[in-house]
Every structure is written in C-alpha cells, then in structure tokens.
Image 1: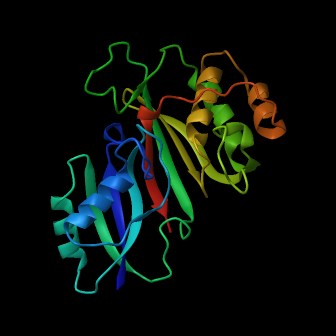
Image 2: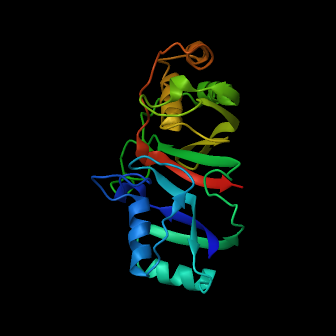
Length: 242
C-alpha cells in the first residue's frame, strides 16, 4: 500500500459538513462512496472538520491505496465518481507517517462578507451579506487581539469534546478587495465554530454595539459577553500547511 495526500475543494452548501454523520451527505461520506465505486475499501482521513455550509478551497485528506495506483490514475478515476460540488486539486505520494490532521502545522481560513445592499441570489451561499455601516478601523484594531496563544474557550461551540481549548493564532487581519470584506485567520488549529464566533464578535465591534474592552474581557478573562456565530456561508478553509 502507498499513502496519498489529496488536496480538495468543495462547495459547503451542498454538504452537511465535512465529517461523516447520520442524517445527511457529508464530504467524507461522498468521498468514501466514490472510493467504493472504484473498488477501494480504505476510508479517507480528513485534515479538519468544517460545519454545514462552510466551504473549502484547500482541504486535505490522506488515504492508503494499492501500489498499482498512480496519482494521475487515482485522480482521474475518483473525479469521475464525484459530484461537481467536490473537486480533486492535487495528489502527492507521502510517507506512511504522514497524517492529514496531525501532521498539519498551520491552517488558514478566510471569511468573505459584503455590505452590498442588493444581495446577488447567486452569491447567497458563498458570501455573507452584512449591514453597510461597518467601521473597519475598529475591527482592524480589535482583530489583532486574537493573535498569540490564548485559551479560546469563550469562542468555542458549547458541547465540544476536546482536551484543551488553547490555540495559537499567528496572523489575524481584515482587508477590502473590491466590494468584499475579507477576514483572514492563520493558526495552529481552531476549535469548533471558533472563527465564526470571532467574526461575529468583530462585526458587533464594527457596528459599535461592542468595543475592544468587551473583547478583552471575553478573550482574556473568559467573561461571556457575546456568543453568536457569523453565518457559515462566508467561511472558507483556504489552506493547510505541513
């Protein structure tokens, strides 16, 4: 057997999240069903979990396959069995010790929003439309507080089962690109719904409904002030670095 690392992109609006579960088609379920169609019994191991409606432009999974498979043959055969909402980008042969999840050093997420008043119906599943009166300067100052090593327990979905809620964020920034507002977070890992909860808090600061001191109190001292996540449709798992 040889191990492949496979980079994929998917339209999260067509899936009930990435990890296998009962009650709806997930990215993992879709991949495993496609693998069965080409007579591969191994299951995929995906690098990280994304919630329902969250997209990916650079997720990764690993899988062990018989040695007669080449990356080119595997990509061709698997792609033919996948829906248009899931794309195989690149396949590499990796060492047997490679693990899509545990070998990852950094993960990069982007959250894409727009303040356009006229919502484009073809973008509703891929961009989060927000109110127009947003103060980007306030968000610019506040977002930097997330950088560094912190206990993000106050920015985690309730009921998550984890060993530690401590994570390190290396970069956090916001910028405008044409008519879009883009949040970028790069860290060693993220808790369930963490980015959506952080963006939700930042938007409240941008609207003047919360301030930087509120963020400090929640982030540094665990005082719960606001826990409403931003919508999932604007969130993208952009890249995983190994």
